[in-house]
Image 1 (cartoon, rainbow, N blue to C red):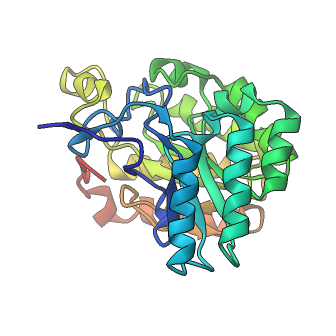
Image 2 (image 1 turned 180 degrees about the vertical axis):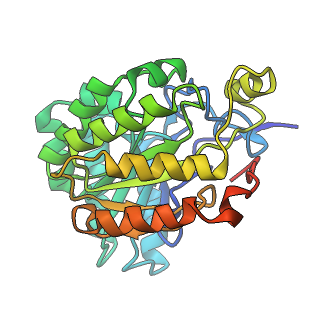
Length: 302
């Protein structure tokens, strides 16, 4: 049985925000068409419609945490893409977090490229000045073809434009890259085009995720029908290795493999400095007989 939950209930947050104060701002996702994503479509036994919570309810939640002495913690503004909400609404929430909660080291949220592009440079600057430190945005792939096939609702050009505008506003940018999203058919394109977009943006951070198919997604049906071929663990590592190898010399991003779906946990505080060592370590994994024969995790929830 699948239950519909209100926007006040938080369904997902980034692993890096595991010990943060979570404040529900929006519910669901205003796009919710990505063929690989089942987050708001029953994956956790729940569905959630897109909604922007009433401002007074969000401020009450902030008061609650402040009154319970949740000071000194990062704050994550939850929802699939709170940046879809009106800018003035978000500014009031961010400023209230900074007012009521002491020593907050980071205020963050998810963002969609299209939401960023709908805001003016002045609006993004307002969010930065209010105290929004970083947004997490799903690049997924730098290939416009793959993004179109996955119904991401954007393309490489839009991703580049949105990413640069976030950074130019003074907000840090963390991008997600999904290894294996092109399947075996488009793996080479996924590698080349993703490295190209990362090079164009040079985000603050990019994080690898490994594609796992959820039973409630269209991509799961494609796989079951034989229309989509999943990569093996070692093939996912090869994709990561070659994305890193194809980055431009300008890329100085932090890099993380901080998700349960991944087959390695490598990280770098500056991939420009660490690239050779990163690649060498990945090569050692790729050539390890144990990893070559490693079965897929096939996680059905995360």
